[in-house]
Length: 180
Image 1 (spheres, one colour):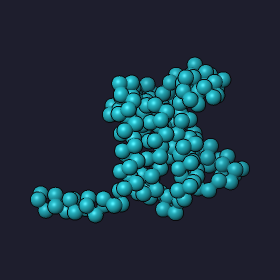
Image 2 (cartoon, rainbow, N blue to C red):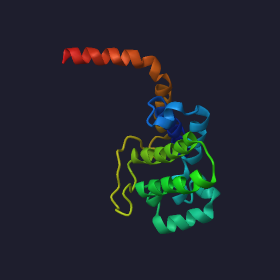
Image 3 (cartoon, helix red, strand yellow):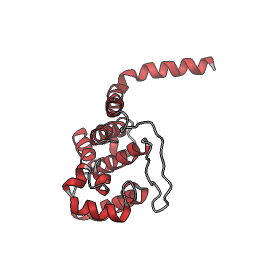
Image 4 (tube, rainbow, N blue to C red):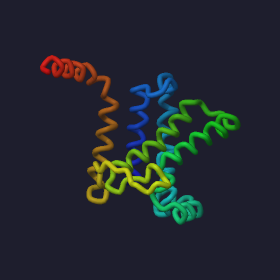
């Protein structure tokens, strides 16, 4: 997925987390915390690719990580998420005082990157060091970058407008249930 796709998908993921209140923190979360936090971390997994936006900014770290783990390896795994969560619990909670909705927004941004890459043909090594790639190839940015952007923007639009369509969705669901 492209940088723009990851950024737009992170916004969609943050909106989804807030709208569906996926945690108790999200019920009271501030939009001005969640969205910027998700945007802050949505490109971090690509630190393992020296040509990525973040890889170019931190080239010395990126080259080392790329040599050791390769692209879409460790930084795109559940193990990386666990380590990020532990880092959050040990460092951020004790030494850096950030509201919980910012910390959860950061995790949402990181997770959104991994989920977005799973939707590409290349997939990710989700259970690193086990080398099997997990993929659900819905988006192929190599073939059509404009389509990727349109899909992500449509997702954001749908999630923003979702409460408006909720009565219609409930009505259609009830009709389907009655027919069945």
